[in-house]
Length: 313
Image 1 (spheres, rainbow, N blue to C red):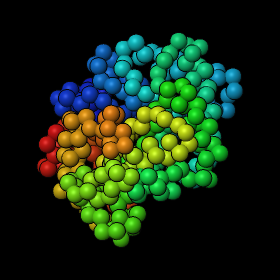
Image 2: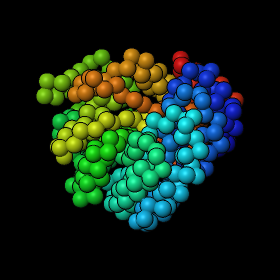
Image 3: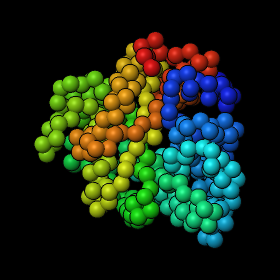
Image 4: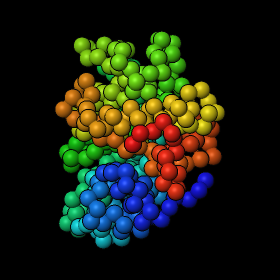
């Protein structure tokens, strides 16, 4: 896999393509990119890596959290438009230990922010598999096995105006959750192509999987008595051609349809007033050493040329 270009080249591409939001996964290892993003007006979703999460979580004095913020956030605080600080990466239904650590880290980072005079919304990153059901959206709920640790963390986040960040990969969901094809749902539902109403759920009509999964998360939160904003921190479509539907053509269709939605600032049937804030995975092509469902994501090659001729960005 090729390394991404230097920060100046990344910034040039962001400006050329009029990209207003960017996700920086690891503040500790990407401080040179944060430096380049100063005074640009580009909104930044920045992350704390899992190794740092466990270290920060273990220190009840919050000194480690304060040290991390002083090193990785405070130098850029006045000049970078921080949208959210994400604590940890993609928690799943099998991650009770990780969720507990993220919760403790959240508490310590919130305490440290107040100590240092910082005010950035804190976020957590959940995979769609934390829900036991998602179709139809009204049937959704969080897996009961993680509720003892997930519920208090979400309550804490609601109280502190936190942000729930979710990862939505419609092709993977469509291929692995067999009930879509079993129920005769077309791949267009995953591609955001559909004009056909696939499901009417308590009077709400769904034509695409993005709306369905987003409202599944909102429903799961509501069942816990919690209300907070949900944003899509990762979404994309692979073009490895190693598995069914992972083609360059379909990847281009998905990104094009997603871009059109983002231009129109649309919400979901359940939350029409909240546009679906979205970060596309990834800016540059990644050929990960995984199976075909997880390979060849990305919009551009390192030289800045489009990775997909079907894209119109």
